[in-house]
Length: 85
Image (tube, rainbow, N blue to C red; front, side, top):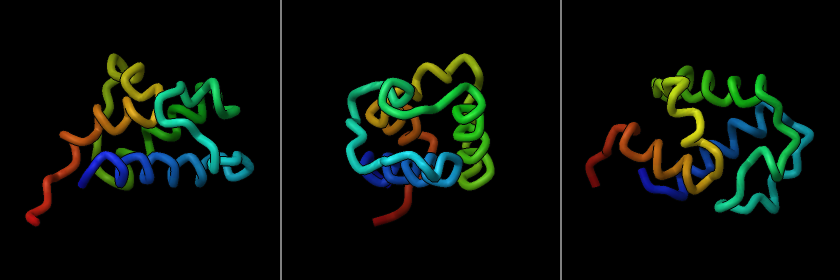
């Protein structure tokens, strides 16, 4: 697993919960909420899908660490099981 794969996983989840959003020009270093029309329920859906699809728990105290694609990748990378190369 690497940062780019994690960013794609997050984008795929966003595409599922907000299918009308245009994700083609999302900048990885800017807050997702500033770029997309995501409300707090959408954000909770992202967290729930990470848990459901990948078994990753994100405590409420860590929600701020998922503000941008870059910060998502940095925070989530150690939480994904490392696969042998």
